[in-house]
Image 1 (cartoon, rainbow, N blue to C red):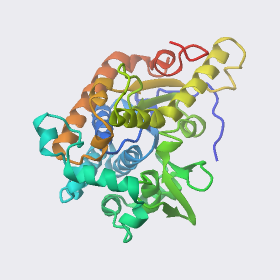
Image 2: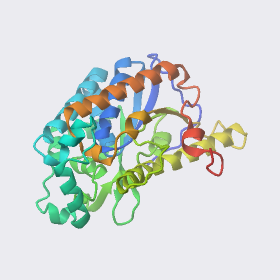
Image 3: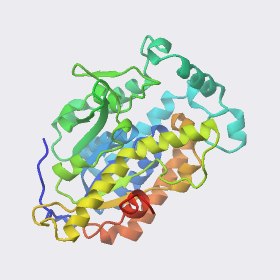
Image 4: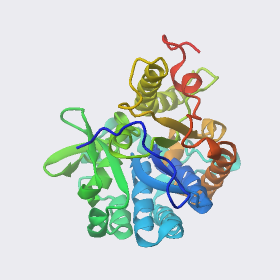
Length: 359
């Protein structure tokens, strides 16, 4: 499926734009941060997006961007993203699960740990499966997906590449859905949390959320795209200075570590290959050098826990959207000139450490 691309792949296009690929982490409602990041990148206009890889909310953002670019360029992509998140917010208005309780609001927090609906759901999900709690398989997200995307047109699109990550339930292997496989079920699969949704059947096989094994994956962008530059939009904090001691804190931290695990592994592999090229042990003419870039805001996400990933309030989305735009603006100002020339992500400090993982 994927072909090897030589290291000499060019970033600059004749139109003066820098060609890049985008990797979008999943994280439920936290994906509104990525919406803000991409809104600013698209507004800037100096980047040409060649490929997108995403998981869960990252996959939704990726497909919205692709559809917009296909229909009318950068502004259309910005419009598609906004319309999608508006529909997500609207779909959650009548659900007691997706809103903060009075205590969370009084504390000025976007978490939902004191929301009666969330507390009841959290308790029941530990006792019963979604097959028992939701036998009719009611899924508001499916309705949003169906009303947001033209899958027939997406499958015919040749100008931009999209890769969605899902986890094959029976084997535990990663499954990548390419643009020619775009359908409602593929998007459902990439966002299928097994404590909330029944496993999604796609072409006779069953899948869960891709975040368990690839959140997101980089290799399709490395092997199947020309650009050496990959911009990762990270939602899950890598570092927390405080040791979690309560059950809630431990659960939140485990969620973050699990959702970052595949990124840490791939970053280590990219760092290893880059070191071999630098040391002259690999031929740079036959091995693709990858330049990694990172847009994040750890301070914003360390204040949030897992429960806020289910918060669909528009105020929360706009809070994250603004934070995403600010993070992207800062990154563009500091790193635009380096795109196509070097890695700007702090791979060793942020993900790898020394050869034994020490700082």
